[in-house]
Length: 309
Image (cartoon, rainbow, N blue to C red; front, side, top):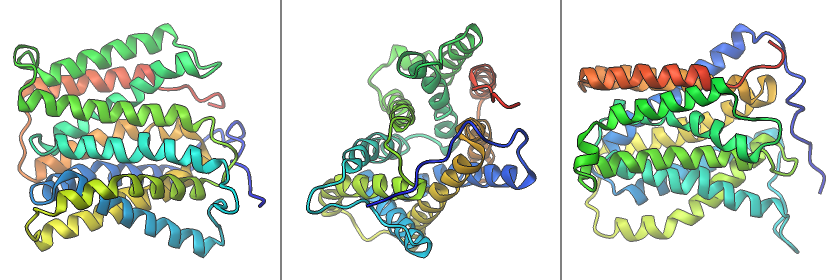
């Protein structure tokens, strides 16, 4: 079975167009608003069940998109294409595990705080890339950015997180940070994925993630009361928006502008999460604003440089 290779990411446009920036804003809004949707849904739906629904909706959306484009998943018979093994790993590190951790953590955290904590993902990616990605070493600028980001997360979690380690709030925050670390691990692993169309890769890993979480989602749903229409619509919006449509837009940005340009979404997404959270009535004390500012400063320093800029 033949397949088109991933685009040559070294040959992107020197200057992103207005359309490129519009797509970047779109994906940042899709991902940034996901936290308030999670907060709404997780109050009535157990995290494994919520993740199961979100992943299957996103998977179906991507499979429909693939069908429209005339793309197909790699063969499973008579012998599975080796890319399925990659999809399983990427599905766990970038779907099942982080979705479950973040959903569980958000049971006791405001959506704005969760969005800010997720900003640790690109900082962790920079640290992992130094070890596992040839030619992507940790410069002094990146290292200072990484330290600033860690300090910002410490400010967000507050001194009580150390004094009362194991309490509901600190454990929930650690779960969200671990979710962000899983996303960073996925970003590193994905660099070695065999040549595959971006839409096919996204659909394959989401399908594997959905299959992984389904047994846990079904068991968790056995004692669940019928969710409200608002909660069900939140899950549907998560699956269709942040997971499905967000995946398609993300792959389009990588194809046309490269992963370095996509990483800029990590500066915008926490801002969206904070803004939406405030509109929903959440409040942020000064310590959280300060931690947010420190993390953003760390992101600016640790961001990858565009070779063509």
